[in-house]
Image 1 (cartoon, rainbow, N blue to C red):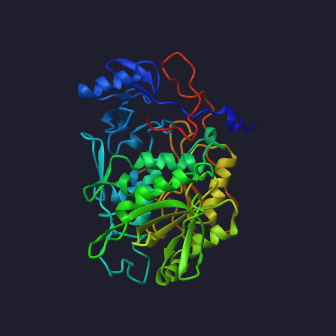
Image 2: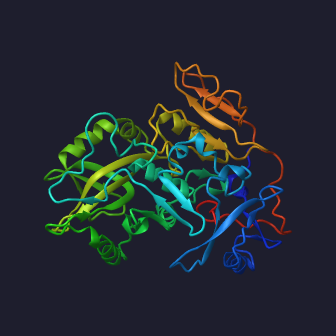
Image 3: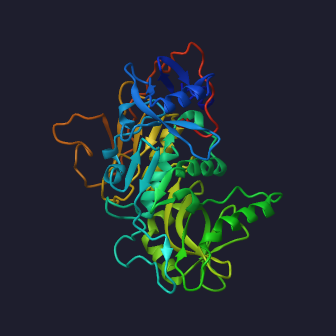
Amino acid sequence: METSAHAITAPSAIYEIDGRRFEIGSRGFADAIAEAHASHQRPRCMCLVDGVEMYVARLAGSDRGYIVKRMPDTGSHHAPDCPSYEPPAELSGLGQVLGSAITEDPATGETTLRLDFPLARMPGRSTMPPAGGESDSVSSSGTKLSLRGLLHYLWDQAELTRWHPAFAGKRTWATVRRHLLQAAEHKLTRGDALRARLYMPEPFSIDERDAINARRLAHWQHAVATPGKAQHLMLLIGEVKEIVPARYGFKAIVKHMPDQAFSIDEQLYRRLGRRFEPELALWGASDDIHMVMIATFGVSSAGVPAIHALCLMPVTRQWLPVEDGFEKQLLDRLVGENRAFVKGLHYNLGRDNGIASAVLTDCEGSAPMLFIVPAGLNEATPGRTTGDPGPAVWMWRRTGEPIPPFPQRCTQSPRPTGLGHARRPPQPAHAERP
């Protein structure tokens, strides 16, 4: 008999600081990490017996003060059920861009991102990517992030790729927005703060409409075109309501912004249908799919926002990204069986680069990789290097066979906290990284 999702709580992180152990939010935790920062101590995450080294970063301009973060490229060193666990970078598109397009400095807590698309537009110059093949908004080299690569990175950093049964029914647009904005903090690109360039619509409220509109206009001010000068572009992340012909040209309507559409020129609109045909088909066929859009946009001198480049990403009702209907079937089954897992993302990689669709985090002592194998591909163990036993591999071959049973979940009691008291209930959205 399956355990009710409401009876399953997400594991909490336990840190050892100067010989003492703390759970996030427990008495003395805030003072302990502040002292660790001042004395350059490294807290240890105690998800494993010997612990895993972390670091403390100061959140400049934030009333939260300090945050405990993973050391770069150490997510796979944690226990699979630890909130700081991350599948090995080489099992997803992250491995291609980590250290080149994405560089993190533990000394400052800041991450520098190299982008493969412009955030400025010269007057009269088109920013359309070249025709033919995949749009630059999707694919790119490993040295810079495409639009999709940036969206996947922020989704990962916000831990919206992580799922645990305790999160059921607790992810809303407000929650997704809050965590993505937090993920964008302390990220730099071309010397500027990414957060200042990022706009995500607030949940719409009739009572707060005027205040919301005023905040939106204030945020957009530095993206307004000025004659004779380069125009600064902003980044938009939002849920698409529709992309349709307008009275003149075409427009994208984003949910929570009923009074403001984004204009799209005809060339981009036509290429949109060709490039994102699989994503749009999945969206059209599944009522429970949200369509997330990331786009660069500027504001004309007349106050009209116009999209210059965009990328689409379907997500499930749990806001978990999916590539196609097969991945949707897989994630629906995992969620339905109350499994805990991390969704894999392609970043800059093309569709033909096989990555693990998901990694289970509720199996004792291991994190099995789940692969969907295209019909006609005879590879026995995708993603595995010759001679390297690696983690367990589960495969579903798309040849008409039903989804095989998943590896068995751990039936033992949850990992002990070492604090002598019960775990606190999970956060509203998901188990947040401290």
